[in-house]
Length: 109
Image 1: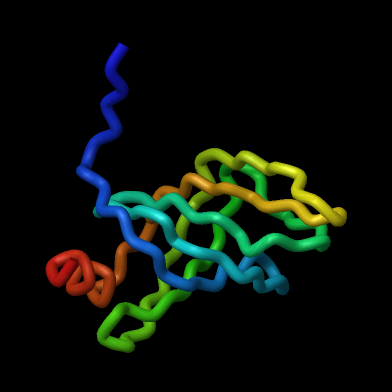
Image 2: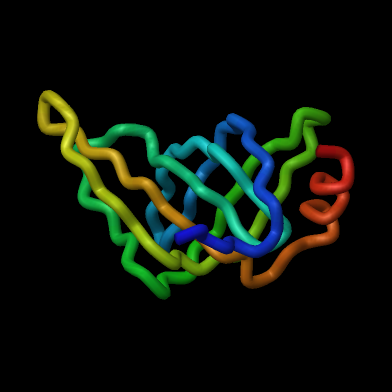
C-alpha cells in the first residue's frame, strides 16, 4: 500500500525550539511541507507534555537568519528511550497558523 501524505516534504536539518505551556524544549526540524513538520526533540531527562492535539509554538531561524514562529498541533508522537535515562520525542505536527514569514521561507527552500 502506498502512503499519500499530501504536500511534498523537503528534507532539512534546522535547530528549533518547541514552546508548550511554560516549557521550552530544544529540537531539530528534520522535514517540512506547506502544512506540516517532522521534529525530533533534543534528548532530555525531563518529562515532556506533548500529546496528540496539543497546540504548541515552534520557533526556528531560516538560513537567512529570519526568526519564524509557527502555531502547530501535535498529530502524532513517538517517544524512545535512550541510554543514561534520556529520551527523545519524535513529533508529527500540523501547522495551524502558517505565518507570512513561513510562506516566504517555503518559497526560498
